[in-house]
Length: 246
Image 1 (cartoon, rainbow, N blue to C red):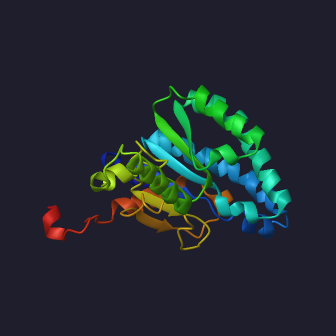
Image 2: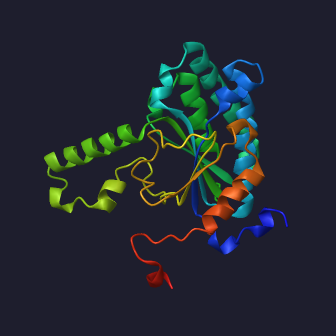
Image 3: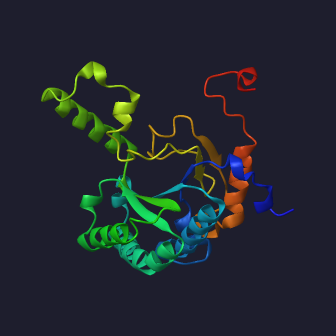
């Protein structure tokens, strides 16, 4: 029995988030510069996005570039920004064909001008698609996001538009960049690393975590299927005991 047929379609996670890790190590294994790994990672993005949409996943978030990634060598950062522009332009037709809407979270206004314009154009062109939302986390940091939400709510309270006692989980979540997007039920990280790396810290409070040794450029549809099958075999209690779930 193939992996896809083992997936229970009425128990799919509504939102899957992925930390795409391992491009540099993959390139090193092939005796190539790190940029080679990033370019080959695009195929994994394409396959994973198509697989998620085919299954019926409604939201897929990919951690594409963190605020910490600016610390990498300038040549690599420039190559990543150029690759972002190329990929968005090359994939727009496919996104529309598959009825996939492009969205972004993070401090995207600080991206290089060409990258920012290409991203905004992709978001605009695909805004009416409804099958699935593909969310790119770009220049993103969960700590930055939480601080920005805190500042926003503090300013509202200072101006009298919001009473401090009215701030609850829903109000705070509404100030995050993921406003209106359900929290991910499943978080996948590739490359064998077992850490969150400043990604969606508020949103993954009750996410199931799945770590795979597969390097991101090698990640294919079957790897996604395996992660979903593993997710579907877990008992999600949210603080309750097993007997209360029956």
